[in-house]
Length: 124
Image 1 (cartoon, rainbow, N blue to C red):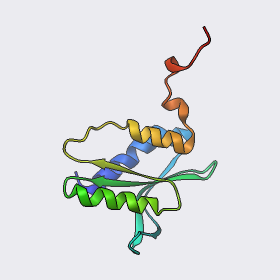
Image 2 (cartoon, rainbow, N blue to C red; image 1 turned 60 degrees about the horizontal axis):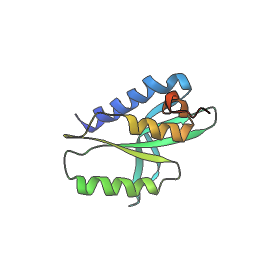
Image 3 (cartoon, rainbow, N blue to C red; image 1 turned 60 degrees about the vertical axis):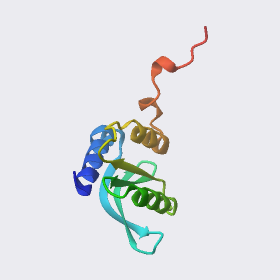
């Protein structure tokens, strides 16, 4: 899978599962500069127009030099002035999206999607 295909897979997953909740998904959004001064392109940018909250998502295929890609991507995300996260794929990684769902819940307040009703405390 190419980096663009992975980006589109993530964008499609979010659109499919969260558009009904009001999230709008963009790809390849120019947003400021990287930590080394280059123009930054956010792979996937998600916004909730109702409250103007946003999340920048960097997508990495870590087939190659993981020791270089991941630390740089995390450092660059820390320099953003909007919340951001890193999603990654490659041989040996699971296809689970649970962690992405947790980040989306925390950013946009969709807790009902990740908190199972069976775990809710009920007074005996």
